[in-house]
Image (cartoon, rainbow, N blue to C red; front, side):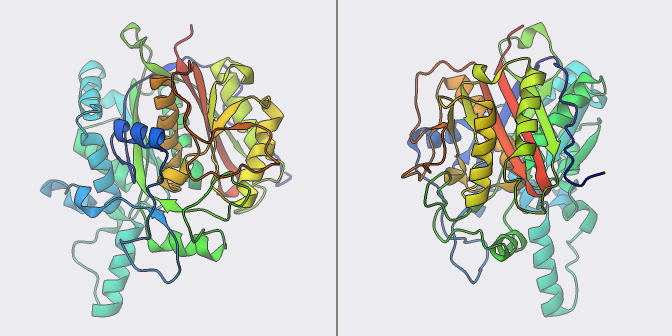
Length: 413
């Protein structure tokens, strides 16, 4: 098999729309969907130099302050990580009602019919780093550190399963920047194949030294707040956060909800870190999401781009966009507000498109001064309000050519 052969995954058939019965989000813009909406309207970035730990190079990041993170219940202390605390704050935000929606889903379907699938790239690496620091300094590992309940990818998913009393399937997906978009696709399959009646899905990621220095070694970290899509863009700003969504099987009572209409996935395996220069895998993912949704590219009202702020990623994505969309397609990148939240980016930015549908607006691109002249799509500088939005797409394209696109919209059947 040619290593450049492309592999679309389950993207050839139209699937039933799945209602998103609740969602919530937490990142540098604040806690809850309303905080994110206000930040999108305002358009000013929330990026600052890191405070969580010291690093020896200049950069900005989207960091959540420690005083906003709740402690886990004493009975679940083995799961205590920054990741789990971010997830707990998100699930408990009262205004979004996600926790109560999960409880209602358990009442409707039974705990054994409610699953959880989360995307992450860091999981509890921050705690593992601190543990090794302690080992080096004092010669022993802290008694509070539990590798399988803190470090491993599925740790936060297992924590939420215990915290919420879920008994359905529970696992994590880690495909770099596309992790939580792929988690949405996996949750969609669990429901459409009848394995689950509801799935709590999305992604959670937290800052750690490993990712900071890892991206620095690739020479793609910006020394200033990142400027996605700008002609003078010079790299990424990392971030942390969570985006959590509850998907349920179709029911008449949920016809008023915004629905997940389609997910497209591909693996182009072009390079370990660089995107395919013509965006071939990205095109397959976007086309697959449209096919599952049963709509055409011309039906999409807004695309939230992956738009990391690196020269290669933004250029490859725009080349892919131009193969499917006309120049009048409205698009933007929102990582200039939040930083690149890696494994949580897909879910957080899918919630951005959910907000676009809910409030009838198209978000702008924070920090954008002059869009790259090579880009032929319509890049939004500032948010546009009072716009009818029926269908949206969110793109996330990760390392190793792990690509995913998600289409949301109002129920149309």
